[in-house]
Image (tube, rainbow, N blue to C red; front, top):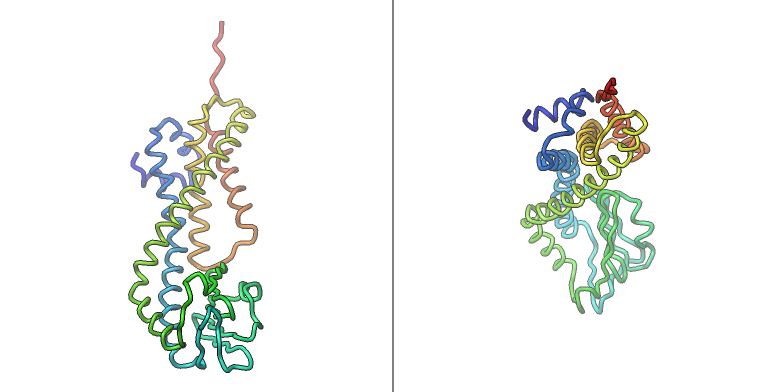
Amino acid sequence: MNIFKQFYRSIYSPKDIASFRSQGIWKTIAFLLILSIVASIPTIYYLSKSMNEGIHTLASTLEEDIPDFRIEDNTLHSDMKEPSVTNTEDLTIIVDSTGTYNEKNISSSGNTVALLPKEFVIVTAGQSQSFEYSYFGNIQASKSDLAALAKSFDSMVPLFTSIMAVIFFIFLAASKAIEAFILAIFGTVFARILGRELTYGQTWRITVYSMTIPTIFFFIMDSLETNVPNGSMLNWFISLFIVFLSIKEIETKKPIKE
C-alpha cells in the first residue's frame, strides 16, 4: 500500500493502522515527515503572509505617518512628548522615546514593531523578541534611514520566510518524533493490558499512524485561525485513544492445545 493510501486509511480505520505495524521503519519515518509537512503548512503560510505585509506596511508607515526620530548612542531620540502609536490593518507601529512602553506590555498585542528608548521589539504570532540597539554597534540612524532599510528588506522576504520555514519544519518534525516516542510508551502499556504481543518498534509504527487524525484536525483549525482551548491535551487524548483502538484490533494469539 502506498504512503498516500495509508494516509487516507489512517483517518478512519484503526484496523488498517494496526496492520502497518510490520512495515519498514523508513516508510514510517517518511509518513511522520508527511504529517510534519501537513502540520506546518498553516503556520508557514500565515508567517510568510504576515512578514510580507508587515514589512511593506512598516516601510510605508515609517515614511508617511510617523513623526521624526533618530537613534544615536544606542538610544532613541525624538521631540515627541508621548508615544506615537500607529495602527494599521496588518501591523501596529510604536515609537516611544519616553519609556512608557516595554516588552512586557507590548507582547500581548498583535503583530507589532516597537522602537523603545534602548531596544526595539518585534511581536508576531503572539511571540515577542527584543533587540537592544547596542547589539548592532554604535548605530546612527534616522527615520528615513530605517524606512529605506525596511524597503530593502521587502525584496528579501521570500528568502527570510524560506529560512524560517525550514527552521520551523525541523523543530516541528522533532516534536512529532518525540510525541511518537512518548505515545509508543503508552502503547506498550495498552498492549500489555489488552494481552497483545507487540515489540516497541511495532507499537511506535502504530502510534505514528495514529497521529493522522489530530494532525488533520489541527491543520483545519490553524488554517481557519481558530484557537482550540486545551489543544495540546486534546491532541494527546485523541492520539492515545486511536492507539488504544488500533492495538485492540490486533488479534490475540490462541493458546496451543496440548
